[in-house]
Structure formats: C-alpha cells, structure tokens
Image 1 (tube, one colour):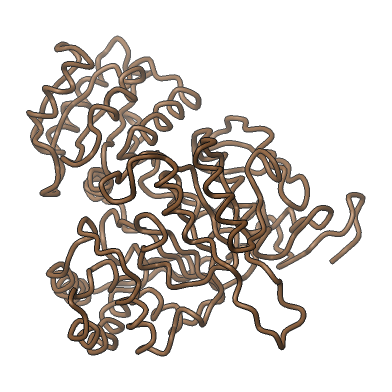
Image 2: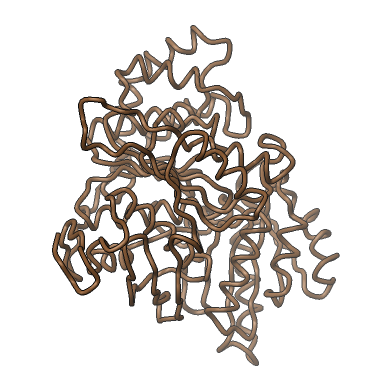
Length: 487
C-alpha cells in the first residue's frame, strides 16, 4: 500500500506493464485425445444440459463424498443472460495479472470439452480431465444409485472442475453459471463476489416468462457469507456486482441482496466505463472503478458491450481484493491484465482477407450487441453473414436484430442435431431480408465459400467483411474450420 495524490493505493502484485505470466504451451498426443473422446462419449450418455432437473441435492451429495473440494478455493461467481463468458475471462486475466493461480469454469465449449475447465489461463490437459474423471467416477455412481435421477453431464463436468481446482490447487475460481443460478450445479459454492450480467428473456421454458422471474433465478447465486467467528479480520459480507439491468430485473436482484445481507456495486452508480475509444485491435477505455479512475486501459476486444463487460470485470476484481474509494488496485497491473484478455468465439477475427469474424451470439440481445459492435468499430461497405441457429432459439429475433447490419446472408446448418434445417431457416430469412439477399448452402465450408465469393465482388472488395454466427456450435465449427486451437 502506498500514498498517492488520490489517496491510498493497493499495490497487489505490483505487476509492470510488460510483466505477465504465460502458461507454457501444452502438448497433447493423439492417444490422449482418443482417451478424452471416449470419456466425453461416456458422459454424453448422461442427460444433456437441455434436460433440467432443478436440484442441488445430487451435486452436493457428490461434493460431500469427495471431501468438499468446492470449499478449497475462493470464488467469483458469474450469472446473467449475455456476456458471462467474456466477463469471466476478463476476471480470470486480471486475477492472473495479480499473480493468483486461477481456475475458470465456462460453458458451453466451442470445440473441446476441456475448454470448460481452465487452469493458469489454459484449458485443462486432456490427460488430467481423463484422470480426474476416473478418480471421481465411483463416487458419481454412488450418487446415481442413491438418486431417482442420475447425475447429468453438466453436473459431472462441474464436479470434475471443482476436483481439478482442488487438485491443482488454485487460489480462486471464476465460475460461470450454466443456466439460471439458483438450481445450477455450479451453485454449491458460496462466492465472495457474485456477478449478475444483464438479464434478458432466454430459456423461458426453464427460468420463467418474465424478466422478474428470470432475474430471481439468476440472483440465487448471491448468498449470505459463511462466517468464521474465530477470524475477526474476515469480511462480514459477500459482494454483488450488478451490470446494467432493466428496472424490473434490477428490483428483484437488489431485493435478493437485502435478504442475504450482501454488499452491492452497480454499473452506472458505484462504477462505470467513462470512455471507450476505438483502437487498432480493440479499444481504449477509461474506467471509474470502486477504488478510483483507471485511464488508458487497452482492451483487445471489440464493441461497446465488451467495454461494459470490462467495467463489470474490474469491479468484481476490486471487490475481491477489497479495493474501495481512495484505495485503487495497481493501475499498471490492471492494464496488463486487460491487455492479455481473450474471448474466443466472441467477435473473434479468424482471417484478414476477406476480414472474417466468428461470434457465438445465440439470442436477439446478443445479435443486437454484435451488430452494434460491427457498426461502431468497423466501416464495411459490404458485410456478409453466415448463419446457423438452433431449432429451439428465437431465430426470428436473431435475424431481425442482424438485418440492419448485413448486406447479404448465407444460411447454413452447423454440426449439432439441434440445428434448424438450413432451407427452413432460409425461408424465414427471406421474409426479413428479401429474396435477393438470402443464399443457402447446407454445410459450413460451402456457406463460407459462397460468402467469400460475395465479399470479393470487385466493386467493393476493399471494404468487405464476413461474420459467421448464430450459435455457439456455429462458432465452434468455424474455429475448427480455420484451424484454431481450443482455448
């Protein structure tokens, strides 16, 4: 801690601008990938994430049998409708800049199941994933035998995550909720910091038909702090970091904080992004944090929505370290952490000629943010969309949100059995875009080739771009097509 012109400053980590610990690259053999595929196939025989049995009894029983690995590390828990993965990854990057060993849980994955479990900024090694599954499998089978409903694949993945973090061990885990919050399997933790990203209408068949109902489910991750009466220096409350919300959702979330006695910091009130300037490869931010002003922060991600996510991520890390007015975190370390942030499949550039992006948006809110980011940060004369959407998603809303930004669309079908038929989706697209702006190619490589042909029109080639989007699987298929490693 030091005294500056603005007051006391918490110099946690004291990282220089160019100091950042990168994990060593990992080598994965074909045999290890084959073993991982066999385990993944075994887990796929369990109930998928689309089949919800709301209860924490199964996952809590397993945690108890395993000796409660979820209590061996501190936790920042992230819920919400959109922005969870990007914000979680920024939090992870900031914590690692402050020299913490970090576990990261995200979902769903883009290419390999190991992407869901990060340790030291890398996906868990396939051999460790396979090993830990072998270690906990007998206990999973014990829970299955005692329960009317066997554990789902997602519940098992959460258990593998928490066991891997205890095994590592990590100092802190950044945990993204799978779906909802209250009954999500990740919610066996009691997080020191809970983050609620913007709440929208999604998964209404499971979470409720109104923003208030959905917000109530997501706010279930905010809990009263478990006190150790012998530790008089320990904080007495957990902290809730709340992103911008519709009033209906905000009211429900704040009511939850009152019920459990949690502290609150809200975007636009206790913290805010004051300025976002477009920069080469991303944007330059000025952020008013909980502890002070952080200026000239470079974020290598595009879009106003990512700037807002950065504000939330910084506030979460400040709350975790106990920063408060007049006691900011070390600014150089904060800049360093943000500069290393990644968010695979979120407006990720995968080719430069023609400029090609991959984005995992899968609902109207995300599609609107994607369109606004492309419009704000780039100046394409022609922008071609390659789109595949799941059958159970709001395809009409997604297409309507993207229409103002796309010159043409090539409708296709990703590798998931949940994908909507390309020709059926194209009929819907024609109602929105018009016949002359819609093309159909039933497979992604063919659809991308068609998009390149459109983008390379001689008259506008210099200002053309392509965005491949519509679902997480679409983004994952595209990353694999371009030879991107799982991340």
